[in-house]
Length: 194
Ligand SMILES: Cc1cc2nc3c(=O)[nH]c(=O)nc-3n(C[C@H](O)[C@H](O)[C@H](O)COP(=O)(O)O)c2cc1C
Image 1 (cartoon, rainbow, N blue to C red):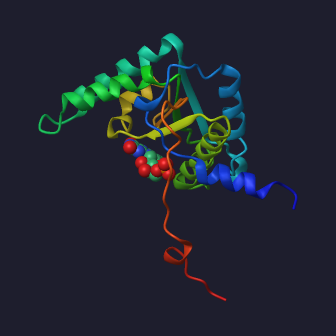
Image 2: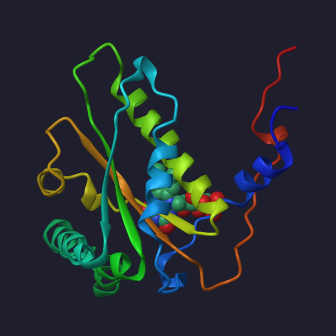
């Protein structure tokens, strides 16, 4: 065996969504964030377009992200769906997280690559980050409120029209016991053809 498979399997199985309300105030250092981003870039990418783009918000800049998400929620949520509780949650997340990484897809000029494949590549990159975070004992939460799929969000992030914001990855050290996950056995999700 070339690698330690039991360790990689443990990391994959232990990657868990941990919500910012369960993060401590312990800082995630910039060197660790760089490690996450570097590992992200080793995801598969059709045509090697490397469509992932990341906007990191940490320290003071977290207020910019919080303000924008709050603004977008207020402006774009129909009255009957608007909830103060939800607004408070949205604006609190960047502050509860040591680091917030806005996940973006740059739609390059290579029209031969379908957009969905560029999005898939970014999702693989995010998984690399989440696995690396898990190895550091850092929790992650991929948040995708509807308000991010919006031209104003693109402008805020300095994205072009065809680019897409795919969510925010919130990172922090958990204050709770590392959660356990559950998955369906492969019998439920696989058709074998032999
Ligand atoms: C593309 C994507 C978007 C997600 N968006 C949200 C979200 O907006 N809110 C949320 O609570 N969880 C979100 N999640 C996290 C899932 O809820 C979580 O992965 C799922 O509950 C399984 O838990 P686990 O990550 O601990 O295995 C998202 C996950 C993915 C892959």
